[in-house]
Length: 592
Image (cartoon, one colour):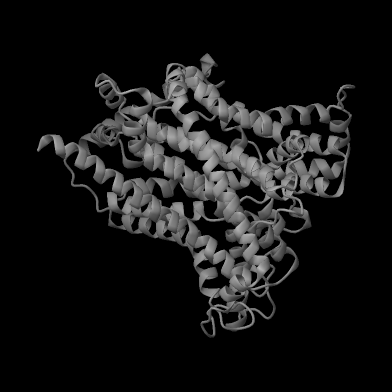
């Protein structure tokens, strides 16, 4: 209690455990890895020169940037109208659609990639349907090509684009659009000149997140693409497994990291910007700096003013047009996107109950044989238990450390809070293959490679950032006057935290714990580097089965992984509902 009282006077001290783990496992190792890439203490760029001297490496690098950019642009084109239509829906429909977007977002990326293998494979759903209808005589090459990789990447990243857009669009004041309409602006003009600029922070945040995550894609291009569709993460992973030249591997990793850092520095990722308020440009466009161009631009903008005035006068008292068709088109578009996000998982769940010796859709009969195979096979069962055990340890460690860090950050100066938060979020904003290499170097120093403890620490550096984000958002809506009222009644800091603060932020803490568990349970790339041959988690077992074996049991495993986020959302909803009921009772008791 005495320690808690001291820390309450200096809240930044609560972030010490988080930064200690981050520095030991990731911060200092990534500096050592960078020095290794420079051949320290000789300090030369020979490893970087060797990378760029090979044309194959340069081709893979540009291919990685190209594929990430195409996937990002596709997510923006699809995600922006989807988010706009979700926000425009009624409250209940909006909540239902957000939940439907959250389900694939929380689902294992490996399970979703497997779903597309089932759909696009030579004996997959689409080819079987075309063959049964006699539309083709042989299976179409729908998999192991660039198009299949894009389909899988966009499917995995689209929720990450939609959710930031929805969070920003909800905060936009809708009366601004109505004001623009009353001034004679047409619907598209009001949207383009009022709503769209206010939603740009969501576009920027979503685009940066999607692009940086795509740079580190490893599973999807390896499972759905061919030899010509490999990305730099696949190249680095191959170097790690087949070569002991850590300096060359480090140089490749830092080249990938440099791309991510350049994008983050150019575009920025301000997660704390107030939503719904117009953003001021940090610097003017180079076109605006040309005075002659600016004069011509103003002159061209003034030309249509008389016609706008006449059109506004003519349309002032006209009845509004029938927007029934626009609503039908919008509803159809959203339904199509929901099918794209949810249909692959639905197909895998149905096929997992197949009674045949092979997976088929629709199943010729229903059976639980593949689920019995999963629970009866020690290989699958032990891998699942290992993932659950590591996931609970990661969730416990990251929840305690991340909650303390979030509580301390919420009580520090805003400028310092932003810098420290971005440092904590570094492991989840850097490409995962770079994080994996850095943690490998750090845990080698502690002799924890191939151990469950090392795997827990490696997973925790990313899980802590997730908990900090979720708990910080909960604390942002917390009324600190409740703490002041408790202290005015002579409650000590520890009592205030346990009896006032903790019950009110409990939903955020449990939500952070659930997300931390899912983060650890789905981790593959870092686990494959840290766990070695000793720690065999469920994602590793699934990945080996996908690449080297044709075992229909994996359909049952993927189905269970797809049901896991649904159970997590139910638990979070029940926790939130109970917390809300307790708060309502607390307000009602003094009134009675």
